[in-house]
Image 1 (cartoon, rainbow, N blue to C red):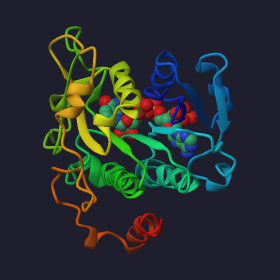
Image 2: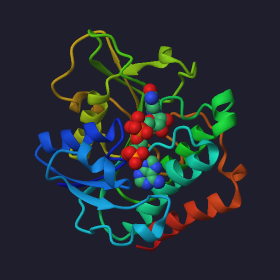
Image 3: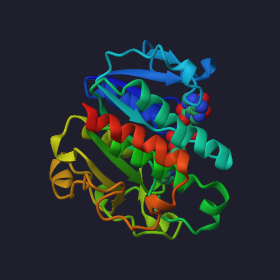
Length: 261
Ligand SMILES: NC(=O)c1ccc[n+]([C@@H]2O[C@H](COP(=O)([O-])OP(=O)(O)OC[C@H]3O[C@@H](n4cnc5c(N)ncnc54)[C@H](OP(=O)(O)O)[C@@H]3O)[C@@H](O)[C@H]2O)c1
């Protein structure tokens, strides 16, 4: 597969690019900062663009088989969350509206938690959750991965655990931990695994060895309900009817398209 990586120069994206190569696929790194290209493996295909500026994305190659999103707007507050965590996903999905692509989207454990100081201040959870909703509405087969705290795992914590319903809301590593490398492995593996299709899950690691094959873990998960905007077991605490009109319109653009093809 030719896999577009949005967020390729980030702490997870770099692992994703390497994992894509290790698993025999071809990455195309979406990069906004030319100085960061040297971080990528030599010879990686690079496309320069800023995901918050749709005009920089129109020439994205169309012979893409899959897209992995590992974008992050950390530190840029609610404007960044809207423009990148949500807007970046929206802008790229628009480009690929008529192209069959498999999607892997990374958001975060606790994405449905709304009342913490962190989300009240940054709205990062809400905007990432809206990005999840766009992916579910896009008609593309997808896997949405909500990882726990990056690299907070101890040396003996590599046994992957996939959860659903997003009920861990401490906002600390108590919610779960996972290595960056394993997040990348799950994101890339999911693209070619039918058992992972249209599933949303939290991803953590607990004491024990890494499993050699994720298929049994994917198989144990429930698929999302196509009638619902959220993950299959998620709390219904961000009702569609209370969403801003512009957000409803953007989501409907995808849904209307789905119905018309
Ligand atoms: N830290 C944790 O424990 C944890 C746990 C779960 C989820 N998360 C979530 O994971 C995300 C952080 O992942 P990470 O560590 O990989 O982030 P990161 O290192 O900050 O990488 C973010 C990537 O997004 C790219 N990006 C940002 N704005 C862009 C734009 N306008 N156009 C194109 N690319 C853009 C960055 O490009 P540049 O390299 O040019 O900046 C970078 O490649 C956060 O959103 C966080 O909420 C974190």
